[in-house]
Image 1 (cartoon, rainbow, N blue to C red):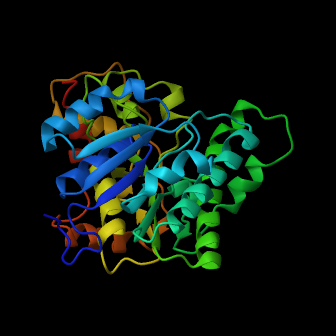
Image 2: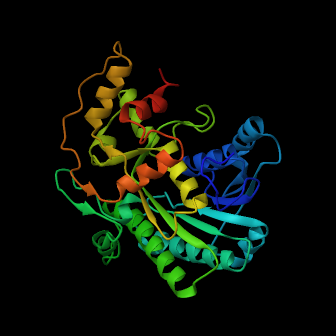
Image 3: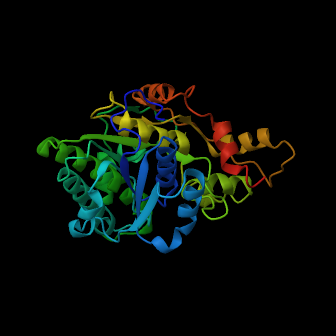
Length: 345
């Protein structure tokens, strides 16, 4: 049964989840299935996802989850048929190639989002549309700098950096990724205001996701969870600890629950939900591992760094939603790290 009273979508309703193969998307699907919803997931390459079908069939029974292959969500002809009988959409798909060319990342990401919104507007059954944005859509992490981040904060700075004239060198990769998230979210809000569809739009802005892998054997430690794995295994190279500045984190399961709240909570309408649990440093993650496994040794200590001192004005609202879903609040860094590395110990 749903953990939210009087949910907008009743159990048994079908939800479309794009990017279901990803770290966040797979957890969103898992949470939806556990709440009694049916899930259709999209992926670019279905041949690599038999493990996910097997996992969910075993946990929730056959017929509750299905996967469809969609090469290009910007192609309306390729997605319109997916929306028949759909009550809600979670658009979690992202371009994670880290290609530094904004024309190859930002333009298709925005086009795909608008294509999904237009397809959803054609179906009267659709009541909610949830977009997975990013903390980078609001601001770039600046450890030691006290930024005030609220629901009106947008990362225009990173968009200017991403769209600066070529050459498009690798140093621009993160800016292009961040700008893709910012521009797709902003364009979604603009589209919704102009078209006034029958469905409510909500967005979730997750900070750095760590935590549990649904299937450590087949999924491994995907996306940003591999960074905690690298610290645990003593492979925290400069690529991990220096090019990824300390930021805020969120447990991936908390992030997924906030997506569910955005999808079914009757009181969440037209909101940007900021999934920021607390700031972290890589040394703090190393110390958390030491606390969990006192006998574990490391080749050396990661240098101390300043915590992100930003004030996330809207974070208490997100924690409030987690409490309404039956949690005590945010998962702690220690618990999140434990879930991230327990299969490695």
